[in-house]
Length: 295
Image 1 (cartoon, one colour):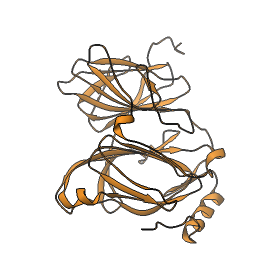
Image 2: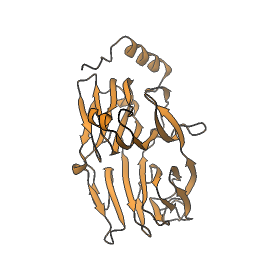
Image 3: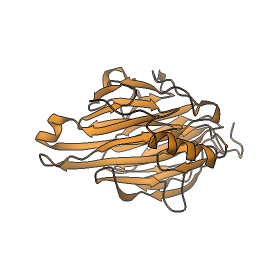
Image 4: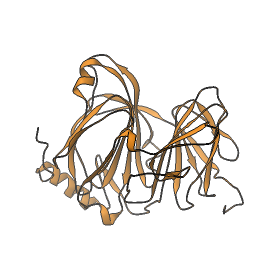
């Protein structure tokens, strides 16, 4: 039931993603954190990597770096990444694959283009989302959930105009295989021209959409958003409406989660509740207590 009598959530604002560089110098588009918009509780960061066509030998990544106190979600659309960490975990992600890494008490992590991809070049495109952990879970043992594309549920409307890939949460009767530490929805929608859909979103969730292809309208007033823009929704109803008003497919991520509403201190790749915990995390990394990657 809407708090103000509307059937769908209204739009608070539309945010333009900024271009920046990360790791060894790869370019990302980032709607947050940026000046004036540092986080969207419980989400700490959204990066779109590419899309970019890379010549042979030019692919770049993020060499050994630490994480503590949050989760990172990597979703690959095109290209191939190799990853390894100080807990002995290693693998490769390809098109459509998802890695949900809970850093918890801390790991040293490496994310690099796969060797064959780096050798031949090709198109790279993907996303990384950082999700804050509640205080009770910040020092839990690190864990990984990796799903190949074939294991991620996909559903469509009867008319075929709306397709959704369910990374976390539920849509169109399909439920994700990922287990999250806090209630999260992470949905990849593709709407054909003229497609319209209303996605239920729990009333206690913060929700936003990020458009990465095409154009569309959102909310009861039909607020327009295009490629590279994030749409922030108010908490005034229990669903989000979206419509493709262009002549190309509308591609978007819809994410929602329960805000933690806890004190947060962030320093680079450490996200804790107090300054003392941040200092401890830095010291643990510098002293080698987070381990190192063995190759």
